[in-house]
Image (cartoon, rainbow, N blue to C red; front, side, top):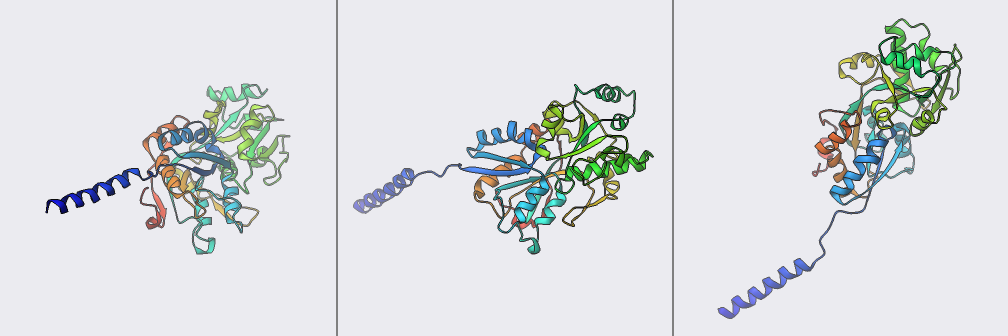
Length: 327
């Protein structure tokens, strides 16, 4: 009996030792995150490094217009293979969902919201006009109508912010009785370098380069999301909440605006919510789950708040059963 117990104990000990000797799986590998370029400062300067430090995964970020990310995912075969995608418009996810779209995305989660502001170059000859707006001495739209103002925006055919600029100005034209306001400031909507009625040059740039165009002096002003302006230390003026596309309170008013892209996709105005999801191109699923979980954490919310992002309820859309258990 004693001999049998000793043999059993020896076997157990061998099993335990073999388990202890086996390599322990550790978090690691790159997590490729393709995201709306308006999140660049947040992701690259704070969120990405904090994620790496906390989890052991390697963060790799790829900023671009949200619409371009969608287009590259829908190509056959896909031109990019993200582990995670973050969009600046919840509606873009619908273009990737369902069997007709290859079920590239099955679910998404809202994690923050923001709104539009007008950023300006502090060294521009028009800066004093914007300073007057900041002091409450003149209406927000006055500087935008100044002769010769070089104004920047993003492409409405590929970027939700570019669409919201048009929506915002159309609403301003209607609500504040500003005759031909949209055309006077933006010129021809789809032309990359049109000229408005008053000589105002309206130029379209990729979202990722709009900040640098303003900082270099090529532009006097442009439309940004609040986190972009704050992160880049761009002075800015606010827009009335009715036209800033940041408040759920005005969602019905937002929805009165529509734009049809060059690909024939009809877009309806909505408040600016950021979303996160894991597409079917994921290669590092454990890393993707870890990133999404971190992006939804209190620590990430604090990092976002530092650049002006507003926290929202983390609501799941789409197939809730497809959301990984780790999230």
